[in-house]
Amino acid sequence: MKLINLENVSKEYLDGFVALEDVSCAIDQGEFVSLVGSSGAGKSTLLKMIYAEEFPSDGAVYFGGRNIADIKRKILPHFRRNFGTVFQDFKLLTQKTVFENIAYTLEVQGKSDAQIEEEVHNMLRIVGMSNQAHKYPHQISGGEQQRVSLARAVIHRPRVLIADEPTGNLDPISALDIVKLLLKINSFGTTVILATHDKSIVDKLNRRVILMDKGHIMRDDLHGKYIISG
Image 1 (tube, rainbow, N blue to C red):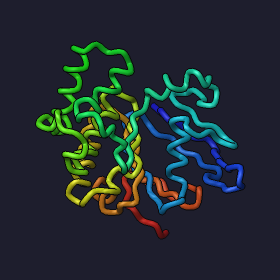
Image 2 (spheres, one colour):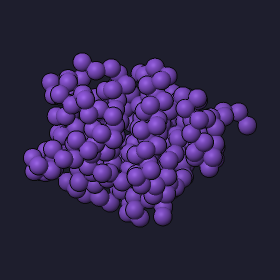
Image 3 (cartoon, rainbow, N blue to C red):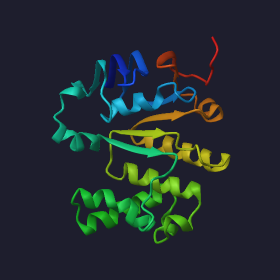
């Protein structure tokens, strides 16, 4: 089933900069897609279109068959629960423990203390952080912080995980661990969209690769590698 559809999407900002130009692609429920290209290629703008942080100047973005532009602004926070997001800078709450960072999303949703306790501990096991639950972000490594960020992003069971350069600040071993976690999350049925410029990671995955350059999709390979030329 086509979960996400972009149809002839363009994005031009007020200063005249064109971030996307006539972009069309579709992503199935449960897919793992690597979105690649150099800085400024349009990757982050495309991701923001998908979770309705930005809206097209032309064209349309559909989620589950619904035009995102038709969603009322007051409903957008509810719509965005379909997504989990992680970035290269972790964005953890520094004054909260690992457990509290992950629990925060469930607290906002009004889950009971018992539900939060059970679900957070389950997620800590999945990401291999059970022994670090009561530590603060500054007490754990960058790779461990990204594990916590991933756990927080998927604790509410979103349909889509958007990972925007999640390994950008990590050493190669920690980066590989994060990619393994992304694959594990995908195996549970979550659609994963990974934006990265890390060729080694993309080539190891052997999953679908969309290459962007200057706001255009240049290649879209079902089982691809990070190949710029051709």
